[in-house]
Length: 596
Ligand SMILES: Cc1cc2nc3c(=O)[nH]c(=O)nc-3n(C[C@H](O)[C@H](O)[C@H](O)COP(=O)(O)OP(=O)(O)OC[C@H]3O[C@@H](n4cnc5c(N)ncnc54)[C@H](O)[C@@H]3O)c2cc1C
Image (cartoon, rainbow, N blue to C red; front, side, top):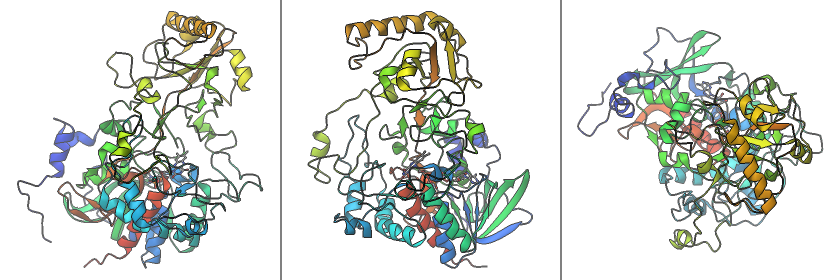
């Protein structure tokens, strides 16, 4: 075996660990919640083996598994969860595949791989906050996506996915290109939704979009083709010949307290879904993302960065880090459902869901933010509650659009204030994030919204919802684990009194909420958890066009692949890049020829 010879230009894993955590040395990965995540030594024996071993059975892992098995490989697919699907099964099932799909052609949409590539690498597309959707995408990665996008659409259909019969549109799309509508919608048919515990009504299954319609057919195909799916197996480390050189040989996993070593004769594919759930890891990219923020998709599955960290422990590089903190689209959103721990706008946990005991409550959906004010942990308002987050680029967002013209950016109306920054501005203490955000409202507001302010709609038991007959009493009650200082009762009272005066005046003198409509004056008063929600991971491991993982010296790590939210260099929301990269990784891993 030829060993890599370090030279002045080379950068070792140890260098990286030293640089990213000054003084912490090899212990740097400790504190990310993954103490065991060191380069695994070769185990004394392998418990299982296959040609290709895939970590994570979500939007990346399932296509990877099918593609690998169809390439002639035997496949083991593991998942830490009790079921397959990851975030993908909870998703809206809006799949942004274009570049000339049969459906685009059927409905007269002009698109091609070149147009798609041009769209997703256009540096000149900028949002009202100045954030560039595509500027920091890696052209090698995007070219591979553009060339495989339409093929992946046809491939999904051929492997059992039914899309709602309509023209491609923009529903659920962000950062998927200005030149053509590309969203297709997976139909859940009769499959049960994890968030509801049951299927949609018979007349809705074929006309609604849901991630169940993507995942369950792919799972069925994978099982039929002989993919061995091991649930409740959590990958704890990647085994490489030497910590910083040689082939990747397999993985270690933990299942029911036991270690399971799984040999991969040809390759290991990481499809673990990113790092949004790992507070220390996500703060590498954005220090404001402290522990109080919610993550869409929890508590079903967790994007705990285990894929990235295990790969970094065998020398992998991160890539495209700038994309991660994109303040656009639904990267970080205001809560849609309040009074519960998990309040992402497009996901409510219903009492019949098997996950409900973990979720705690289904939440109160805010139809009109005129009915509440939002205050920070010291009881102060901080912005116009009716404002949303920034948009992201989509079909026809920029009109007229001239690809790569600086005028696209020059014609932009810059508008810096937004919810995310206001919520995360903090209160001037040493905490890096903004702290909890509470929606305050009275019983009249609950009546207007049609809310029932009792369990199972609100989570009283775990401290995400409080009620009291006076505002002073309400502030005194708020005491969950994220409320690091008591809310000053006088401050909350003053905030509401001032807001009520704005209603009288018909004008919000502080944050220009358009004509504040309703006073907060009728007891009981309520405080409901409404902290921002983190959605996508848009940065991760460095990969090349073949989805091979690349190390800190720019060299391929033989036998290691990655796709989806754990891969970097690509700021596209969601399922499409995962499915495409899963296929690319599966195909290339199966085609590896390994000596010995
Ligand atoms: C509510 C919601 C709605 C969404 N709607 C859309 C939409 O309409 N359109 C769209 O394009 N995108 C949508 N998304 C985003 C989309 O679901 C994700 O981008 C996509 O699922 C990511 O795919 P992935 O393969 O990277 O990860 P996932 O699909 O999350 O799969 C990762 C899997 O890896 C497993 N795993 C993690 N760590 C380990 C480990 N150490 N060992 C073993 N297994 C592990 C997890 O349990 C999980 O099953 C939505 C997301 C959410 C949460």
